[in-house]
Image 1 (cartoon, rainbow, N blue to C red):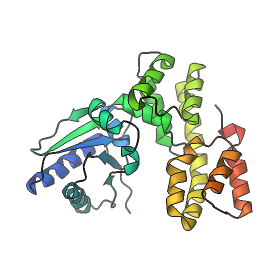
Image 2: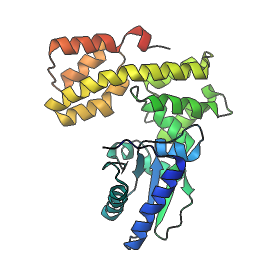
Image 3: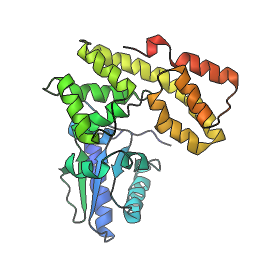
Image 4: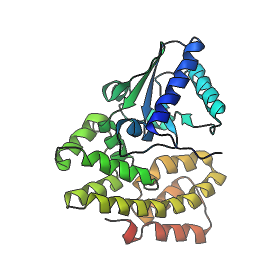
Length: 268
């Protein structure tokens, strides 16, 4: 697999190329939402680029997926260079936000309309589903909050309520970040701290998740995408393992449980 990095210009050009292929094949009118890092790259200069392009559509389109694959093969990209995930579509009020919290991206296509996820939706996602093992999540969140004129303590609850309708709240990580900002933390120093923390957790997840997948892929995905985002203690970690009947070797489970929640990595 070749490592790639999509700049704003590259993302725009590739989306236009996919749309052109779709038009040539006679595709029916389709609206495609670009979200995640690619959406931030399209909107803001602080994000230099993304390593893939996340998209979502309201109805499955095998033809659009074929066009994505064709463009990827043409450029020698890895198979999931542009992909969709059920996880994102399963978040509360996805359908409403698809229309309310996205803006149209200029594109010369007769059949494809591209939408770009807006900042409020980005902020809510990162606060409520913060990935502690991804360095970009911390940096993106801080930069998005930095550019807002309102007081964070006032605007954030309104944003989360508007996006998720009270069905999701800030994750423990999100609450810690907001608390640090409210207590006067310097944005640049906090960004460095989050980056160090992400590198630490990335190493743990690189060991833990493959071990779990060997035993039960579905349960491992459930822990990876959902449960682990709310772990705050060794007890939370062990409860997840027990719930899914994982019996990791004690020496491994004990080590991960101990190091994962060391105070220097679990507070700001």
